Length: 326
Image: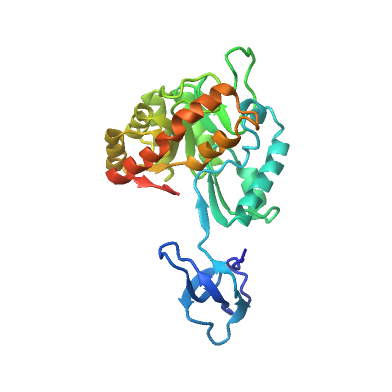
């Protein structure tokens, strides 16, 4: 891994660092090119044949330089596959586990991650202060879920009150959602995440059924828009995606069961699809050994193959697909 200097770390002389003799992948060309990447004040200034006068030179012979990667759907607190286990864990444990996961992401070349469901101002502050190595971290705080929705970790047979609120918080009703949205924005959340359909690892909700009423979704979108932010929605089915986008959601997470008319609606409303296919592939291969419940394994198989079709439909319709409005 080649580390570029952070902004402000180039010294009082204003010298430029030249990463010379490197193989360079620019994210577009099919072939690597030989050359030199010159960095000034933490920003790439030039891709050139060689270093310039006065450059501090880092010889990268035999190594490859790539652009920093972006993970638009990363859960720092997702230390387990079971929602109930996560939500009943001490936050101190999840924060330490999250710091380790973020450092691992940075080591794999991810320089920006967006956390749509979890993370908080304290973790973000620790990163800013250099207490842990991490990418640029865009947290959303606990996702908003209706009772019995994707963020409600209680199985039907468990009669208990819900605590936690680390990755998701159960909030019902327009007024309560307005307060919850404002609280997340107050604490510095990059965006607001809602659960707009059932999910793979949630124990008590059908996968395809829309969650939250249009009025509930709309009030969250209004609060986010007023602050120059946006709403990201966990949604699988075309119906759930349609309700979310029609009421102001800008970023659809997963979207595996998207259809062509709904893809066209997303394009019309300037909404983005953030696919997460690698997750379903990993859960298909390793879910059972990691304790994924049988009902969740069945849901996962349903969405795994459909995800590739969803990406194709989104691209054909001209709706965004990839990093989204980060």
